[in-house]
Length: 449
Image 1 (cartoon, rainbow, N blue to C red):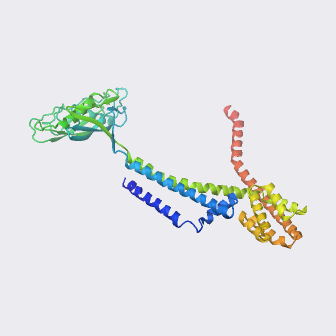
Image 2 (cartoon, helix red, strand yellow):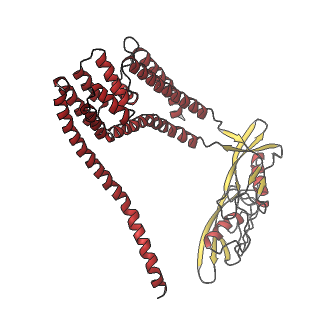
């Protein structure tokens, strides 16, 4: 809980620091953001330049900042909720008893006598088994004796009544005999003598269990209380509750009384705050992962964009060559080829053509177009065009013919690799199908043997 409290202090500090960084240090003069990596991704995905690219980058970063601040706020609210969780809660009086064979457990009970409140754990035992349900194992006999020997006493830690020494276990299989190291205090039959005691006395009870062939001993310790000992009101209610619980073990539910001998009784159960704290801290890395996954989606889009551009490269170069051979201008050839081969090429080529028409040198515009697309094959292509375009169309055609041959070779190599990958993926299903066919063929022969 201390860590949660520390986080509640740190999160507002981090939020305030993030806000100050955004306001005073992250803005370039004039209000535009300068984050080249993000701007580069947006430029490729949206084909934006100049002021449009700056505006899109700023909007993107502001959106991510809002998401970051909202995440911090939610973590702060959740942490505050963990701190404000109640430490305990009052429950209904019905206490469901564990089924036979389940581990018995205690419940927290609060006793209120005026201004004095005492809490203790009331053990709610298992429902008694029938003889058919109860096993003959010695370990089960020991567990049964822990409940049987105290008799009318709440436990062996506070013995004031005679003990119960049954001669057989609950299944009737094992013979039981008893010995005590203080026979003057507790006799072999379980009789308790307290008149001569001046101080509490601990007595060791040795139980011998035998099935007629094997013998095994186990020990119990009973604290006998002298008659002169005065039982407090709260201790008496505790003992009475234990007796009531034990006497009702033939039912599935123990009804806890609301009051007994003037003492208010209620069951309390602590909230498992440790588990809630663990879940709270688990949310922090989860939130971070979700925040990072958003960037990974953009990277996947970039990979898909690059793959599509690479797939159409050969056809794109070939169409440019065909258009130029038919007498079309270089700009018109680029626009016609881009219109056929892809949505990512059209805005890039159109932007470059517009730049040339407004006075940008062709060599500069084409070289920057290749760098803007960012793929090695396109950078090589437009570097060739930017170099050959000013020298005349004949030289450009020769260079483009060579580029088409190289692109065709690359396309064939890529297709071969994809075919090999597809073959490898089909290998395992083919082997499995072959095994099934062999099994179907051999099954009649094997079954007839």
